[in-house]
Amino acid sequence: MDIVIAGAGIGGLTAALALHARGIRATVVESARELAALGVGINLLPHAVRELTQLGLGEDLLAISATPAVIDFYRSDGTLLFREPRGIEGGYGYPQCSVHRGRLQMLLLDAVRARLGFDAVRTGAGVVDFVETADAVHVQTRAGDFTAELFVGADGVHSMVRRRLHRGPDPLAWSGVRMFRGASRMTPFLDGRTMAIVKGQSGVELVIYPIGGDMVNWVLQLPETDPGPLPGDANWNTPADPAAVAAHMSGWHLDWLDTGELVARSPAVFEYPMVDREPLPHWGTQRVTLLGDAAHPMYPVGANGGSQAILDASALADELAAGRGLAGYEAHRVPETAAVVYANREMHVGDPHDLGRVTATYRKNTLADRSSR
Image (cartoon, rainbow, N blue to C red; front, top):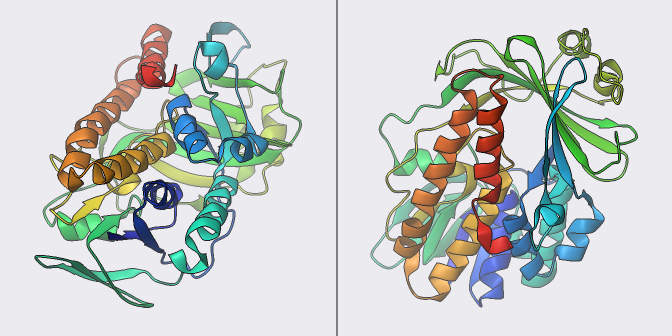
């Protein structure tokens, strides 16, 4: 069986590795001409770490990650509100890993090229179109044409494959929250194994955690309006003014963190809207499907974005190896990922200072997969 995967992100590369481990050949086509270690930090939950460990990447992943033992919830006056264990300390058989997204992508890319061959990832090969026939899918890219038995769109939140499969209205839905993100070079705070969420006035929230070495990742979330359609002028991955961002935390009093220094030590600060899409009842056809953000964009809550893409990849490989095809994959993953999308939305409904609700939602997302115990 031959499979073409659109997108050399975390989900697409993990899918190639998982398929290869089950004896299924895959080629990844990527629109970028060169892949580099770009981005900021992400978290991988224990069940996603389990999948990468079973692919033989566990030690390499730990070498580039921090492994948080707890997540602390604070008020902006420094009061500790709640503490919850994470990873091994939370009773799991695998750690939670906090890692720079670009480093993780390069780890996966190197593994794909080492195991499948250098040409298994074709750069500069953005998908232009695809045609499904009774026995194959013909994929047209800017680097040439590919024919395979199956085609997987792992091409991100702005997926061309998704637009082609679902031609009706499918808008991005805005949470009403604007996010500012950075990765700062500094000594990790507290014991170096703590994630923290600091809740300020008017729903302003800082999420901060070490991501390995001398890097600390942070996200400042600013509620602006009620959830609704995404404005046409919303900024995506655009540089933001560090001083203006830091000003939102100027009155905070945390004895373990200088928020001004945190922002100042980031080489760049970027702005994003917090968005998702309404879950689809199905993702694809008999020979074409979706994976990761292309299938189920979700709010970055509870460390589920990258984790769910990795679980997609494992499920895809398992279902194909078992002979259940894409129908089996979608029957497994569509309802599971839809449940996560809706759970993440709970974080932005009602009183943002209701810590009981907030921590319950985090716990639901993080502990839902008991198979990692």
